[in-house]
Image (tube, rainbow, N blue to C red; front, side, top):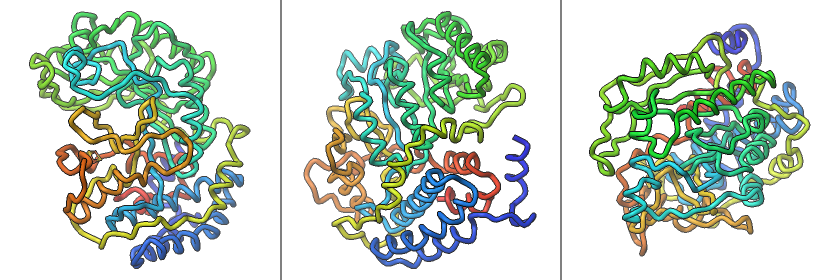
Length: 455
Ligand code: SF4
């Protein structure tokens, strides 16, 4: 941890260490001069051997190849976003996947709320993500991505195979995180600790049952606390610093008075941190549930690893899927059929270039927005039998809309009328910095990380 802090605060160049900065700066400069995707592809192809040779001095072949691919993929994604491209050579560097589309809770504002289900407000199905579908998704995007967030609208712990899915992701050296209510009867804490999971959000918005269930409807706080104890105990018995446990408390008017008590309980239970989060406004669903006027923030308890600690970057070196990574490394960046739109300084949505979401049944969503019957938000269906959903027709239409301002298609994607936050993605700059710092905080110094994450 101390060395991580040292490398973060003091640029490697100041004490004579090699960094990724010279090669990254050159690739970035050359990409900035490109006038089309074919030229951009040539730039990253030329950069590949140099980057790999430099990384190979620090890593085994598979991690060095994986890091090379991830860096070049991020550089290309940045190029595409700047060019407002409609078809991309780059892959999503962040994946959001629901291991289960189901949840036993009914929190206001969610697709599972009582009102939403009664009125059928959302186009949401029941389903469980199978290992085969997820494995196919990883084959396609795993070598290029930096992380997977294992939840969107479902409770990930309801899928008995979630620890296996996490382990699959770790075999591609991906960062992994999930969010859970922990209000589940069947729970194997050891399986989660041994899966290699980096970070676990515990969504607990109260310290007493009455207050807690005002929002976490159908939730059982005693069961939640029992599962927290089991998790903390499993980490201790197995000697694992991960997953880092973050008790996240959504601050509403009805529960803000319990923040202090909850923080106290969090410390006593042995989680790593307690975070007060300002929630989305869910009054459209239940007018009684109102956000509280409190300042969000995090309290960390004692010395602890970061959320992607170096020792967990590659927790299973013997299980790294070297073959899949090598295959991707040997493949040239192919030129897609469609041409770029003319570069435009206008607004675009970052989700369309950075992350991709998939529900448990394989429906591809461009962001974390929930599809409704009246919105066109399902951009493809992924069954693992070929095709690149990140360049589906709907994706291309959405990117083209921002690039040109035209809606020249029937059944236009929801993006053409969207008013959501289009700049903040689930896996973005903070996660890029954390990922590469975990890999080698000295080599990926501040200047290198600025190029990779500052866009
Ligand atoms: S424009 Fe809106 S609907 Fe489309 S991907 Fe971005 S946030 Fe989602």
